[in-house]
Length: 512
Image (cartoon, rainbow, N blue to C red; front, side, top):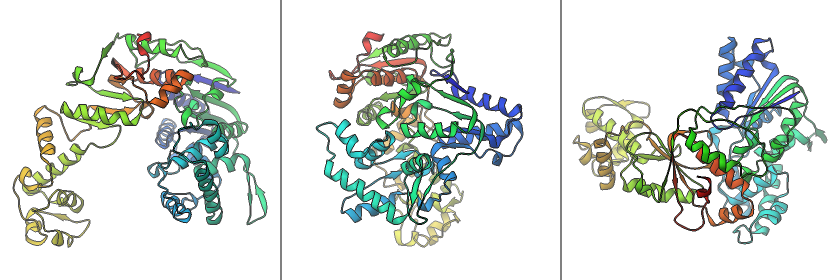
């Protein structure tokens, strides 16, 4: 039996799913008989910790709270040494006499969060997510003006397969494909098949982001379960470009319900978002309601018109290259901001300044903090003597001056001679404006794709599109509508719509 829950923005979809898991546990279902699959390793861990605390059971009783990739990794008995890493891709490039930079996000371990910097590796991943051969994908979907060369793609894909075969290694796509379809093991001369464990119930979160191969994997798991609960929102399916198969989710059969009340989106931004999403042709029709507050929708021609003095902000654009211009304007306005989750340069410098001030007052500093200070000194610290310092030790300023080459204990503006005038001016300006540089900035900038799941009091949406995105918009508007729907529903209070400077932009005026 399958239940499908649609969770529009801010309706607490994941929260509801975790409560459902808690109900199964309280009715006596053993934790080992529950599968909870999500796209984020952190989400899986948080779900496991919450479930364990609610029923007072140890965390190790919840082995199947995982990403789909992690599930395959553990079920296949793999170890990290057998999984392709950036160094392996570089070695492959050396073998082929082709520079290859790329790999996966190692911070996420084996969670399936892929980050290929090389366009050829990106294309190969997209093709396999759609269960296509790379050359077939190339012929179908690559534009005529692509920089990717067909023959080079063929060489890299063939070389990749030979490399993995010779080294006995797999990549993330292999994990899914082998677990779903089985594979022929040359060492044992037999086909290896995998059978999922038996479950009482399995859960799948953010189902709209599943690729075709991930759907095949979940269906294989689902057949070994008495119940399944699938949650997601097709209206927020914005990763089709990366292989996500939102159409399968739209056509999924089962008992359906819609979470109807948003706890995030106020009335006026909701009206805009609702008009946008109802232009999508292929979707599940659903009604949900905004929160009681009105909020506001405002139009602007540029960021210079917006007062960023107070509140939390998200500034969103459809493409990475647009963020550079946005950052330049925020710098001109002398604002404290960060790019997505990256630590801003000024925050790192402020930390160094604070540690230098502490050191001057007699507080010992750890070697790592001393090293950061050292990197911002040139004239004021002897490089050779610094190298004599021992890691994992603490040093006071007298010890550094007497033994390790520190030449000064003056104030930071003079001591940190590697700081540029612009850095100094910005730090002084921001602190005078009352910004706490020890904390993360109030203002974040991001692509719309990079911010799904986030929310802020104030959201600025840049409606300009790249040339390729604009062409896609004219040919098939559904994906672009979904993208700007996601952008507009990030706000908790005020929505600012910034008109494009060029003609190529999303026509949002007709929805306001």
